[in-house]
Structures are given as C-alpha cells and as structure tokens.
Length: 388
Image (cartoon, rainbow, N blue to C red; front, side, top):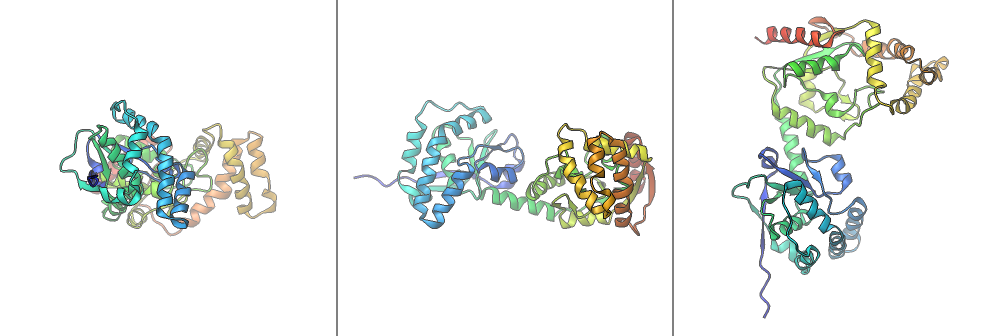
C-alpha cells in the first residue's frame, strides 16, 4: 500500500524582514517585464517563466483549466530548472549537488496542482540563517514555493520564501511612504539651468542624507526634455526608490529641488509633495551663459542624446505657438549651434513657463549657484542657522 505524500514545510520570511536582514540574496522569479516594472532592492531576476510563457499560462488558467495551466508551467519549468538552479548557486556562493534536477522536479510535481498546493505548507522561519537566500514571485504562490521547496530539498537550506511575494513588498513600500513625517523642509528653486540639481547633489555630498533627490530617483529631469540621456523608471519603481531613501532618515532638515507634482510620469506621493510644496523656498540664480553651459551638459552629455532631443524640440516649436519657429530649433541642433539653441530654449520657452508657475511665491533668500560646491556650503550653513 502506498503511503500518503508527506507535507513539505516551506520556510518563509515576511517582506519587511527580507528588506532589513543582513546579507540577504534576493531572487525574483517573476518574468522579465514584471521585474522591469519594479522589484525588491538589489534583487536578481531569474525568471521561472519568460513573458510569453507567463501570458500563455495565464490564458490557459482562465480559459481552459487550472490543471492545463499547471501542465504548461511544469513543461516550461523543466526546460529552465537546471540553468535557474545554477544561477542561484552563483548568486549565493553555493554549489548545487550533481543531481538530475529535471527528474526531481517531475517527482515533486507528479501529483498535480491540487496536491502541490496542499503539500507545500508555509512555516515562518524561527530564526534567519546567515546570508539568507530569499525568493519571491507575484504573491508567494506555486511559482516561488516550488522553487524554494526544490532548493531546500537538494541542500540549500538558506532558501526562504517571501511570504505574500512582491505584493507584500509593495504594501511595505506604500506603508513606508504614507507613515513618513518630514522634518523642516527647504526647497531649491530657480530658473532652468541655474544648476539646482548640481547644488542639491553637492549638498548631499557634504551633508549625507540632507537631501531627497526626486529627479535622481525618477531618472527624469522633470521637463519636456527631461528624459533625454536618461532611463525613466515606472511609478512603482520610483516609489520603491523613494521608500528606501525615506527609511534612511533625514535628520533635522531635508532639502528638495523644486518640482511640480509630477517628475516626468512619476507622481510624487501626497505627504512628500506637501513637504516639498510647503517648504522654505531658497532661490538660486546664475548668469545666462552659465545656464547655457549647464543645459548643454545636461542634454548633450551622451552620444545618443541628439537622436532623443530632435523629436522633443519639434514639440517645443509647436508649443511656442508661432509659425516662424517651425523647424528652427531642430535646424540649430543639426547645424551644431547648440549654445544658440540653449539660449533660445531658456529665454523663449523655459523662463516664461517658470515665471508663470512661480508667480506669487516668496523666497527667504537668494544664492549664486555659479559654483555649485560653494553654493552648497553656504546653503548648508544657512540651514544650520534656521534649524539650530
């Protein structure tokens, strides 16, 4: 008589512990597109299914049957399990045993989806091992449970499941942002090109954790040309980066760069936006030639920038609202007349927009930003006086 299969305990860790434990190796088993949108900080993407396979499995689950979806998932996993386990070993400094992983997977999945869901039982880890290997999928379901079970079965006892998967991590991110309380806030404001970002980053260099660089987190300069030379991140990835920064703390004060509610396509969360919008405004100024130089450094620093810039310049020509601008800005770029182009952008487009958006705003003091390092030092001293 065959005995009933024995349940397998899957050691689990909650998302908050996965974020704060020392020496964690995080493995994201979701598809590449899921990972690209957002993931745990520092996670390595080792997808159990690629995007096409994931889409097929989802379709089968909803239009055919859960078991047909499981069979397709099992087939896809068989093709990838050897490589996946090898990469897990490389990531965490572990040597997998010489074992037929495909046969092991077949044995574990032979009873079908229902049996696996019944036999793989979550069990919170009583204590964390050194250098824990935490694995997760979308919600901590069979995708990650089966891999953790297999890894532990073949000797990687450091393997843990993130309970609730990425969804539980996402909840942590939202909670971290919503519960953050800002210290006294200061905001660097000024015309485009004065070097607000340069000064902000100098402030961070001389006073670590004094600033929150929203444009750096979003990888966007918060303007119509703001993505040129950068790779903007998704809203969820922006919030993940922001939450990680907020957990680090700020001390008695925090400094932002003046922004609208959106940094590119990323929306600043409500309580962070309130701290920025209501912060003490510090005006940065610089001569036009310095602003031209800053703009050129920003938008033409990378070889691919010209290709990205040209279509956006066409859009600005339309926004200027005058027929005589059609083709002018693009022609200046193609002719290599970058400094002239930058002056026109500043005087005809950016400056009027900025003055309109800042109408009625008052500044407590003004700083010359021509030398970002010197300006940052003076601002830091001024903030010290305000927060003493």
